[in-house]
Amino acid sequence: MVTMCGITACVGREQTADDLLTGLQNLEYRGYDSAGVALQNGDGVTVCKREGEVSSLCEALSTTQAGGDIGIGHTRWSTHGPPSDANAHPHTDCTGQVAVVHNGIIENHGDLRSELTARGHKLTSETDTEVVPHLLAEYLAETDSTIAAFRKTLRRLDGSYALAVVVEGEDAVYAARAGSPLVLGIGEDSHFLSSDVPAFLEFTDRVIYLEDSDVAVVRDDGYEITDLAGDSVDRSETTVDWVPEDARKGEHDHFMHKEIHEQPTALRQAVRGRVDPDAGDVSLDEFGVDSFAGVEDVQFVACGTSYHAALYGAQLLTDRGIRATAHLASEFVVNPPPATEGTLVVGVTQSGETADTLAALRDAASRDVRTLAVTNVVSSTAARECDDALFIRAGPEIGVAATKTFSSQVVTLACLGTLLSESITDRKGRAEEDNLYTALHALPDAVDTILGQTATPNVARRFRESESHFFIGRHTAHAVALEGALKLKEISYEHAEGFPAGELKHGPLALVTERTPVFAIATGRNDEKLRSNVEEVRARSAPVIAVASPESPVADVADEVLAIPETHPDLAGILANVQLQLYSYHVAALLDRPIDKPRNLAKSVTVE
Ligand code: F6R
Image 1 (cartoon, rainbow, N blue to C red):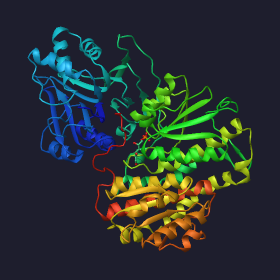
Image 2: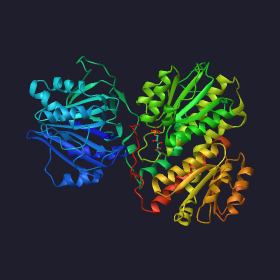
Image 3: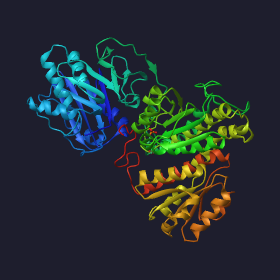
Image 4: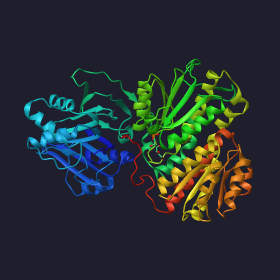
């Protein structure tokens, strides 16, 4: 069984169970099939775990007396095998003296399971993780040193892991990382471990990002970090610039709603110090003037929403005379396009942890192709492994459906495109002539206008019962059409498809009826051609919703208009996408869907 999950731990807190639950709630975007905690006090280790969301675990814990000032917790997303109480973490050894939470995959768990069973161990779950506490318990019996037994256990594991372990009678949490994220939080007289910072952001903003092969022993009054051989390693402490409110919904019913409304701020952050409309200049701290000398073609790799941002970005680069293509990361790995010395492979990934995208970037690196990560998470694997990293500065995104990060990715790629075009094509000024820089600065206000005046609640009421939804657009609006359809599917569970507008007549038109609303996304480029496509669907009685400037010819022929303020055509797709995010949100709310935790999904997909 393969899992990708959220783990957390704390040492030295008075309300350990409550603090672990807070952490797990803030990590639920990583999975919500089951959850559990293990608490350690003078009487031993107590485990409580439940199938379902963290709220089920909260209920279960409220009826137990579990206490202790050392604890570990887990929230799980399973890729195969049913979510169940037995498969939930923490897992324990035969005597219950060791409890383990794990994110990753123990690839040799089959062999280890056979070995342990042959020696009399009774394993009670179907998980790969359960071999870890049993192995550790065996090694503990052979030595007085818990850390030595823990290292010996780690040396037996193939695959990837972030592990946190409590052991009866010990005043520490033992932790290790190999290929799965793990962060240490440093508080006053207390310490935390987690897959991601939001888990303990309420308590501290001082962090250490652990690296692969790090082994940590964490106590209330300090921590030690060593490598697998036991040699001390030095990891620097940093302060994250996120605030506890980033991990809370505040006045919003859902994180998705909050994050849609954070887009003006996120967009301001994305361009701050990078775009100067007065000087007509784009500069990125991460890169100098000659950073891209020699680059001849750009291959984007990404998944899901990030792929749509990459497709949008590839279009912007192509417009600037750069050879650019966008690839689904999972396909890139099985069918990599030819690369030359001048190829730059750009991984677009919010989390920087998506396994498919990492695999594509590693494939490129193995062929000596230069790599660049465009990501939201400074400490992410993609940022660390690529030759260069460019940050989108959107702040934490917790809703499973990506919203603000799409907008920030596109704006960041627009800046990158300008820089690349100056370097590759030696052509300065195109963007300046087109007032792109001014438009970039005005974009947050334009998003605010949409958020204040959107007609999406009414349009959602009108079309929520439709047989299917279609989204069409040309050029950058094609990427937005795909993204609009993905968002609707993901959070409302309604069927939706996005198409390049010109393709509709080559097949999908057969599906168009009066029960299939068609959203036509107009950017101000190719609007006349799009209007012709709209006429084609209107002739088949489909209701048309223009996502367009009210001045657009597409708006004239639509049944409804989701208005976008006038802007540069390169950026109109971002505004249209905000309307589509709101439409999906309102449809999902009317249908009473679990918007922040859609079924079967998790935010950070760390398995291929
Ligand atoms: C959709 C969504 C996913 C992610 C995809 C890639 O709303 O969130 O499609 O975009 O899993 O994730 P990152 O960007 O973290 O690589």
